[in-house]
Length: 136
Ligand code: CMP
Image (cartoon, rainbow, N blue to C red; front, side):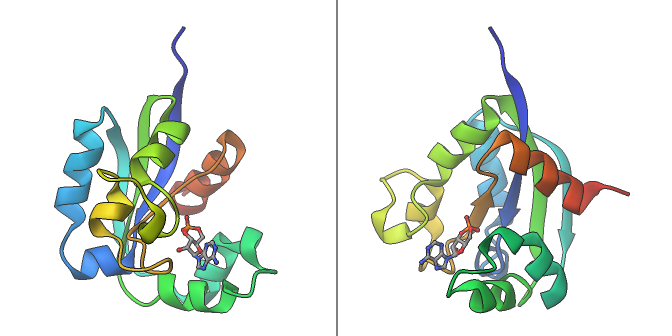
């Protein structure tokens, strides 16, 4: 049975800065994802704080929000069967040093903060995160 899902993907400032967005978008397409919504934006710190609210009690919250708002990002809604889990597998572990060979964070990530891509972690959060960037 098919289980078509959408997930929110962000190409983070470190990857956009290195002009990797087209290469990363090709990786998504090669792995069966359709990019159904897409925009390049530069959010401010309070928008980043709102987006990453689930992490507000974490010690890295302030740096994380400063980082996400430090430069342009590409936000996308990606669609495929089991998109949420498949995207997390394609991205690899949060820390690029722990990510498996062939994953996006292994290939492109610089550090746990500059880990090049974000992806939703659940069906519920995917909906919230896609609405955050694409609700008009
Ligand atoms: P992301 O998937 O975008 O979700 C939250 C981000 O916080 C994560 O990727 C990391 O880039 C960043 N982060 C920084 N420090 C940590 C940490 N110790 N554990 C988890 N995430 C961290």
